[in-house]
Image 1 (cartoon, helix red, strand yellow):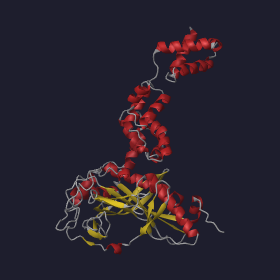
Image 2 (cartoon, helix red, strand yellow):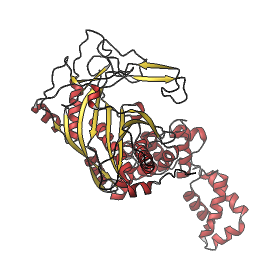
Image 3 (cartoon, one colour):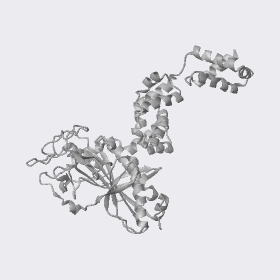
Image 4 (cartoon, one colour):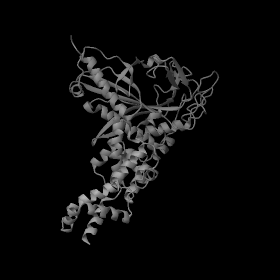
Length: 498
């Protein structure tokens, strides 16, 4: 009886070459939807932010949102794209229950932005990711499948549809295929999405909150033998965290290698990524462009951005993330390795906001790359979702710097912050963790320790200051760790010198 042996990742990359491509969807932070005046607020009661236009009712006519067009041009410019002097919208025809018109207004063969790139730094090396296109469309609604075990349609007893999201401006950023990454393909995919997210957040055109769906990534992966034609790709849909982007690429590389090793073929299809297992499962066969029956949208005039407007938007672009990080590296006096560690942890913005709230760069880096990174890794979440805000971390460091907390006590306070007990000062007071600074109380504890350890006291009087550790430990035990060890040492030595 034969058994299938799962390949190891090192084995896969030694025999196959991966090719990846990423399609990232970003909901723009406009006040109103793409083609109507309905609000775009997140979290509204289902089906309360809709109108005849976004529901596609007969007789309704769309009008393009200028703010969304401007935001898309700014994204294209930041990605070094060419901006079309003339382009138009098309109808992408398909039926899904969350698409009330039975078609989506998108852009097909004439996108707004084309042929750009984004440079991504990974372990000190610059990797250029080509951008095929940046186009503008409208988002679909949201379907909730209930009654099943997985939250998907299979096994559900009923499905509920919320059309509030239908019609929200959506930018799709499509990379060119990226070959030649080898074993680093998953890592570079994650780094690309992180850099793209930081860039879009810097532009201020979206909150890019992956956990809320305002930024979603479809991950295309294929394998081929060295020197052979690229393999058939699969598209893992709606991956919603940086960590999951990396895991999805790795998982598909392993799965496809197992299929190919067994003599099978890869099917071009969409796949679903499962956060709990890190695996992907089959979705549906992937349609080609002709299956969608694209044709120009008859109810919208073409877009023709004036060159002067495009140049004006280009001149007003803010400092983009790579340049921003270079400036911070100099201001914070960091080495290349230090900056790379911050970047790898996704902590640049968190540290910067902590510094702005009053902490030193060194202290902010210590907390975010130390205790908080450890907690995030243990819980399998992004660092920004670990449960502490930059303001809270800065307040915690202020309490340490002022002598009200030791590092050890501060870690206990941080536990309370992460548990949702409040801000550091509140937790310090509620748990009674403030450093004992009452000299009288400390002197009494020291006298008690000396009385209990007279032989140690004699050694110190005789000049053996290293023996003071015994008395310091006794005082720390008496004060339940809430005394400052340095202060206690000074008081012990002063007491025994008199």
